Each structure stands twice: as structure tokens, then as C-alpha cells.
Length: 429
Image (tube, rainbow, N blue to C red; front, side, top):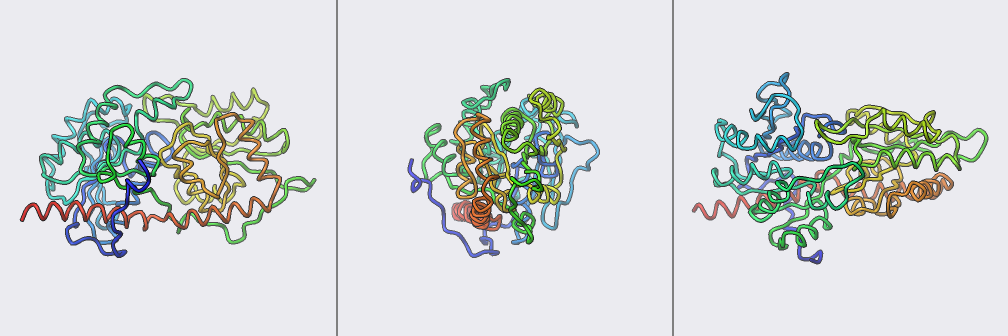
């Protein structure tokens, strides 16, 4: 499928929702927009749901988010902002569980959501991830509401790019994704590459897909006004600072980042690596802090490794601005949000050449085929050895990020919602 086949609908005037779009229900069954990104099951999906909901509300659209009640300390409903409410749905224990186990509680989620006081009062139902899509199919049918689906990741792609020690995605997920892809009123792809994969895998036509990328908060993630690009080859030179941000799971490649540090230190002995992130969710394979420390110790670089739990978004922006190069050696990504945030902060990115990162890292970094730490270190050193190139790449990365704001992404999202809600209204006449 060519890029033309995907197509984008007309983008409406900013700040003006379609008259047919007043209330949206979002489904984020296995993880909540209230969760801390970078730990457990929290990541780019959480950021996306939260930012979409907040920015839709600023444009006058009421947003209700339904998520599984996994924290007994939280009340049934939390107001995230004016016009955005998060509803906790009774489905399984009020405790974190493996997201594959969440599948056992989807019927309970559907029944509980149907009993909610606002059930069936929405113009559009937007499901995030395959578990939400399974629920969304049933609720959309019962409520006669258009269903929009964003997968965020696809099981077929994850199974094709498993890291050592990772467990394959279950057959249930593969079957459910195919059903959801073919029954949703519109499937949103985060990149053109994901749209092509959906076409190849499930035969979806461009008329049933729209590319709506994630965005970046340009008010929060921005370059320090006094940013400098020092040399690292003099006796008084500062230590090069490398950064990795993400959950500590084999898929994200934190082990590759540590091995890359060891290779970089052959040329820059004082280089340091900060890893920001927490362990994966319950029941998932994790490359925990102890394993990473042990690896660094075996490689002789333990004195250059700093491990930090997941941090809030403002602190994360500070971590980006303090770095000289971001490492993104993921084995699979649908959309490299971390790479986009780093570029917004003026930090060059060295990333694995996988589709979700390839779509984001344009002139703002280097794509490295494969996951050999020698190759990644070579790309890192090319930036550390050349301040002018580092500055030039930082400038290009900021331009990439400037074109990918959340407001632009929500323009596209509102256009899709308006198209589907308008068609539904016409049928009701």
C-alpha cells in the first residue's frame, strides 16, 4: 500500500470541534492515564491517552476514560481536568495483574461499563490497544456508536521481533486484533509504516485507516536556552552523558545501552549512562536494575552507570536536557515517543533502525541497523567527537519535533471523530 492509500481527512480549524462531536468515550483497559509512564505497563500509550483527552477537553469535547480498577486506593472516578474524567471499572482484582491475565476479565469489563450512568451517550468510542478493542467491539454494537481503534503495538510485529527471553504474544491477541481491525469503523495508525503493516497483515484499505501520530508537549519538552555543545577530548573536558529512557524490558534494549556504554568508553573513558525507567508490569519479562548492574560490573563500567526509577514528565524533560546523546536501541517500536521528546529538547538520538523509530528520527539522529553495541557506540562517538555535528543534528531534531505537536495530532483526531459522528447523525435522520 502506498502512502497515498492511507490518506488524511480534511483538518478542521483548530479549536473548533465538529458540531456532531461533544462527548467521547476512551477505553484504556489494561493501563490508566493516571499511571506513571516508564514503569509497569505505563508508557507511550498512557501519555497518548492523557494528552489526547486533555487537549480534546480544551476544545470543548467532554472525554470519559474507562480503565480497569487496579489500584484500591483510587476512587471510582477521578477528574483529570475540566471535561476529563477517568472511570475505574470493576473487572478482576483491584490490583495490578499481568496484562495477558486482564483478557480473562474483559467480559466483566463490558458488563460493568454497560451499567455506567453515562453508558451509550457518546458520539464516538475510541479504544486504545487490543484489549480495549475487544471491549470496544461489544460496547459499540450495544450503544450504536462508531468505534475508532488505535493498536499502539501489534502482536504479529512483536512476535517477529522478540528479544532473547521474551515470551511470544498469545494466539488470543492475534485473533482479537484481526477481528477488531476488520470491525472497527476506523483504525488509526501512528505512522505510515504501521498503516502499511495493517494493510499487509489484515488487508485494510486506505479508506478505513487514517494516520494520526502521537505528539510531543512542546511547552514541556524544549531546549535549554543556554545549551552548549562542548568538546570531550581535553584534560578539562566534561564527561559525556548518555541517556536511556524506557521500561526495563528486553524489548526496549536497556542491555544494549549498557553494552554500548562499554564500547563508548574505549574512546571516551569518562562517559556515563543514565537509565531512567522501572520494571515491566506484573508477570512480564523484565531486565531489572540488579541485572543491569551485574552486566555493567562484568563489562567494567559499573562506575559509569546511573539507574533512576521512572520520573514525572517535568523531571524527564530535565533529564533529556542534561544529556548529550539519547540511546534508543529498541527491538520493536510502533512510535518512538521518547526519541521525539529528546529531539524537542535538542538532544541527538542514536536509535535502532526499526519502523517506529525510523518514522520519528529524521535529521535529528542516526539510525543503526541491528543491535550490535559496537555499531551503536560508533554512532554515539561520531556525535561526541564533533560538537558542530551535534549542534546541527540538535537543530534538525527540534524542527522535526516542532512539526509534531499534540495540537496538530488532535486536529487530525477531531477530523476523524467528526467524520464518523457526522455519518452516524445522517443515518439517524
